[in-house]
Image (cartoon, one colour):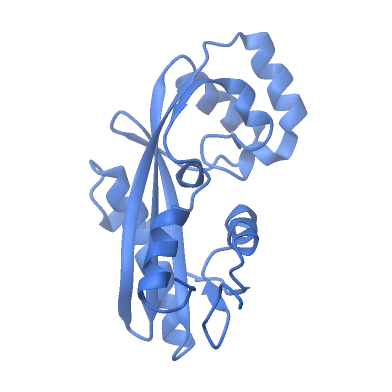
Length: 202
């Protein structure tokens, strides 16, 4: 008996390769569709003082945008924000931006806020979010340059300019929180919702 009980694969409204890999490893068949929303405009509508709210709103808007184009399909939207105090970080466009971002984060603790939303047609089926705390080492400028050279262009693909599942783990002293939340997909909460809705074997 397969774990997935849905008649059609889950539709993932995200281009994230790590989210895709997590779901496939958990036995969830999926298809991918770009949400094609203006993320900066959506984020601007959220409360700047609540980074978790920004992630939740983006996940919701992604899921609803794709669900509106695909009647009857179950769509998963997901997003993640990084906050250092009241400051919210975005992906950097280049190595110089990554260097500046990592200098601000080093030696300090920051939070990753990951949100998910399930939608069908014009309705939300489920939404939730989770947070994790990460403390960067007070690494030297020399180590920073070594890291940037080794990680190369991957530093522009993730908020915070790191991927803890790869070389980014060398930047940290301490990580507190669910591993999947840190990767941008609170998987246990998602699976609970999918079981409740009858899409995953219970």
